[in-house]
Image 1 (tube, rainbow, N blue to C red):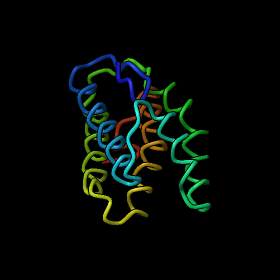
Image 2: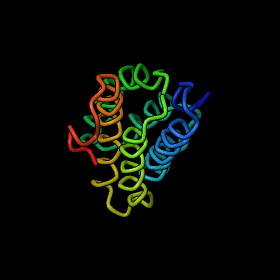
Image 3: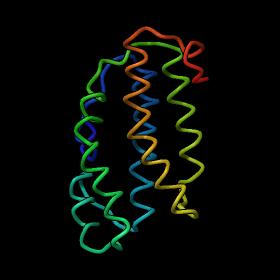
Image 4: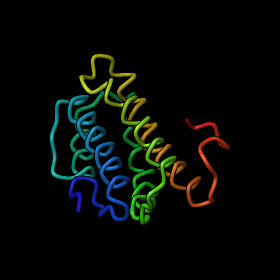
Length: 137
């Protein structure tokens, strides 16, 4: 179980490993962006509400709103699927470039994209669409 995100990934080992890596990158983005650590994402967001500038609260509200949806999708049994893995690896490539948070706006964008894209990627796989059909790769 990934305690910080509050989920247990299951399914194909390669898909789980890729998604786990993407989740770790986004956890690190959160920690580096705000120079704050916590045991869970909820605790992290609660701490941040206490000291971020007003304009950042919209971002935190987005995270609060989207977390239950993200968790629901992360509980999906991940099958072996080259397009699914490729889509996750693409997100890893994009997000890992922002890990130092030199550009905070871009780092926040990667986190938002993570919350949006993971459900999209899993939904598309559930529907049986290939990456070529949806132009993901």
